[in-house]
Amino acid sequence: MMKKRKLGIIGGSGLYKMEGFKKTKWIKIKTPWGPPSDEILVAKIKNEEICFIPRHARGHKINPSNINFRANIDALKQLGVTDIVSVSAVGSLKENLEPGKFVIIDQFIDRTFARAKTFFNEEIVAHVSMAKPTSPSLSDCCEAALNKLKIKNQKGGTYVVMEGPQFSTLAESNLYRSWNVDVIGMTNMPEAKLAREAEIRYCTVAMVTDYDCWHPDHDEVDVSMVIQTLQKNASNAQNMIKEVIKTFKNFSADKDPANDCLNTAIITDSKLRTKKTIKKLQYIAGRALKVSNAN
Image (cartoon, rainbow, N blue to C red; front, top):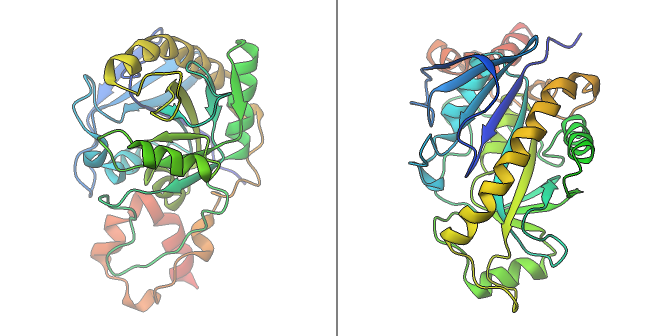
């Protein structure tokens, strides 16, 4: 039987707070992985409690390489989050994905190299599948919300994640276009991998802000260009999230690839697992470790 579902929102560039909610409070969460990007906003809309964290912190103080992705996911899991919608600003690598359009991502290419990418790096080893890295039910829900609000969107797309914080060279931009990649950004890896290890269903809604630097008829991307589009996108993102909160439980997640995925992922002999490591992983993998220890 599926446990009660609870939605978490991870806000990217331009989305640092949630507007229009009642009964809100920012709370500090401690994790074994250090502090999260910011306090977690816990808010209620009707009878639904949701959790929100700005991945760059309020005021945009943390660059992509320095985000504590493990702490962010652990903090949300501690608060009972089962489903995450990640909202991210991206550059477009395709003509038809113009600034202002939203893309519901279904695949990633991870080009990052300076980030901790797993919770299972001490004593306990696990290999989760990332073949289907996003949640079909959350993707369907976000698509329905965007269509209802008449916000231009594309369902399905590949997001290449670069290390940053610099933008692409022209050669890199053209290379990714030759791979048939749809959008480029700096933050959804290892976030999606860590959400999977935590058995949290995950969906990325990517907000296009620019054409990176490949388009001959558009200037190369700079911060002022991104901010200008972000201001428009942020309002649409807020409206989409409010709609998703109302409807996400209507979309069945019974066959989601994140569900109980650690059951077949943990490979370390249970006799070699120390209490210290099990305690560190209690929120991320407590359920699975109990199951495998029992076996």
